[in-house]
Amino acid sequence: MSTLRGAPAGVFELKRSSSGQGLQVDKERYTSEEDDRRTSAGDLPQGESEYEEEEEVDETVREDMSKLEDTFPGISERFRLINRIGEGTFSTVYKAEDLLYNHYHNDWDIFGQAQEREQEQEEWDNPPSKRRRVDGASGGRKKARFVALKKIYVTSSPIRIQNELELLHDLRGCKSVCPLITAFRYQDQVVAVLPYFPHTDFRIQYRTFMVADMRHYLRSLITALKSVHEHEILHRDIKPTNFLYNPDLKEGVLVDFGLAERQGSEYSSPCLCSHQNYVRRSRILSSYFSKNPPANGLSGGYPKADSRPSRRANRAGTRGFRAPEVLFKCTSQTTKIDMWSVGVILLTLLGRRFPFFNSADDIDAMIEMSSIFGTRRMKTAAAMHGQIFETNLPTIGEKGYSWEKLVKWSSCVEDLTESESQATRLLAGLMELDPSKRLSADEALNHEFFTDPVLHDVEWGGNPEEGSVDSEEEDEAGEDEADEVAML
Ligand SMILES: Nc1ncnc2c1ncn2[C@@H]1O[C@H](COP(=O)(O)OP(=O)(O)OP(=O)(O)O)[C@@H](O)[C@H]1O
Ligand SMILES: [Mg+2]
Image 1 (cartoon, rainbow, N blue to C red):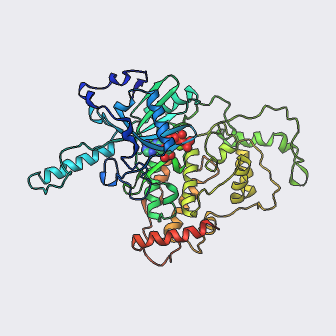
Image 2 (cartoon, protein in one colour; image 1 turned 180 degrees about the vertical axis):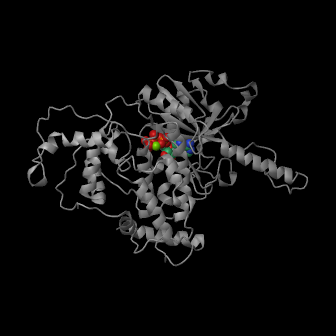
Image 3 (cartoon, rainbow, N blue to C red; image 1 turned 90 degrees about the vertical axis):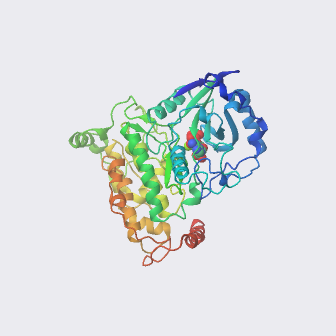
């Protein structure tokens, strides 16, 4: 990664070759030229001009982009800002055209280069003389190359920003992980430059996914995680908006390493879960709670002025996607926390509900979890991390429910198809309370769901006896029914 320090003048010249001098870009050009919200099904990779449409850019977005250009005066010579494409907790992301693409080695551009090779092959097979000339189809303007400019909020701590950029740098070349092209800074404003990846909004696609689509989605996501985990890095924020999936390519890229960390980088005493079983058992048996069992099965509450130091653990992540050990404040969290979140995505897809979990805080999240797992398994899970789980909510049973039952209830179907049952078995392996028993990325990729898939697939709510149907009809039917269920 090269770091371009943003400076009031000439900073981009550091990397600009002399032939780039002519690339003066009119600021107003970013207003309407291209469709940058390609978030519907059918998105294509960079530079597919048939998808480029005129679009009005909102006034606030224009102001925003103009401010970015004021902060980095040379930016217009390097990037043509197009639109704001994301507004997260930590950053605003803009789509821009990379005007100096051809001045650099672009090893990161796996998709763009693959397309180029295909095009070259086609030109080789059909030399220009034999081809019918179509207006604008040959010669002239170079293919537009797009990037995503992630403007990290100045309120983010420098250590956090450095961490994100460093981890992305370490992960360069990993399949399905969005590479970092470069980054630049002016005072406290940092901008990371990433390749723009056209993708479909998860909220649009999840209801239309057949099991085969889920398989492509998950294979790509888990492949990304396999490489991340091999580097002993925890992403910590696996959720649909951080995995940009393109259904045409059947590939996605993992983004947003803002909360990522290296495994074991938290300096606190190891959690009970990292000890051998016998050590764990003896510690639990010698605890105050075990020696003074509460009468009638429930403890008398908790001390008002608890003098014990509160337990601290990294709880970074997004509500609804946090693994149980994160909620139990485990101090030895591993890459398995990401696999739980993958399970939540699969549950969303199979259950046809997004968000599946909708808790206001961690206590709520634990209640949601215990409604599924039941108190018995929650107590065991808590004890593993040296915690005590108790609830007197009458709606939470002791035994909990099977995943199969839950998926059926949630998706409002009477029976699961064979392929859904197979996906549900993968779900059980991912949403395992005990992180040591939960599937790793590598194990998940070797699950029968990927290695020996049941290919018989029917649209959601269709008759399990019927095979797949024509895709257009299937999409419409799927969406209508999905709306009905979403409103329940
Ligand atoms: N390379 C990219 N290509 C296309 N869109 C992108 C790219 N990177 C980010 N985005 C868009 O910007 C959004 C926010 O990006 P990102 O998750 O990196 O920022 P964030 O501020 O950490 O977000 P949040 O806090 O919501 O997770 C993404 O959900 C996506 O829609
Ligand atoms: Mg994000």
